[in-house]
Length: 151
Image (cartoon, rainbow, N blue to C red; front, top):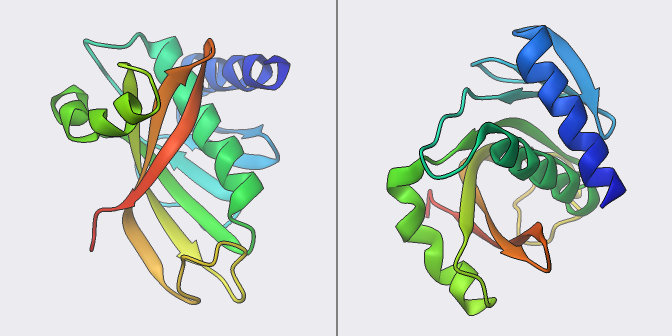
């Protein structure tokens, strides 16, 4: 929980103080703007929601960054974007299967390197609509499913 809190604070500072400038979160260079990254940089798309407060969305981004870092070695995360309130119903079943009725989802672009640690990814491929689905479980947001929307 301390890691999530630290990540949240770092992201909040990035969103409020740095604009398009960069900061580091979990060893990843994070840019709060629109665009694409190049390996060690991740672009966080502008986010708004009527369902979730800005701080909750920032926690969701931190969870995705942390999960990616732990499970997707030899791959680069280029951007993270909230899918929008209007698309949450599409992903709600993943949360319900895990015992939660609260869901967040973030679309990402992943550039897969040589010998990816995640066996479900194809070496040298780019996945441009790879969605991380989060559910609120045990008083924290957790990744409960991942969907490749390009398929």
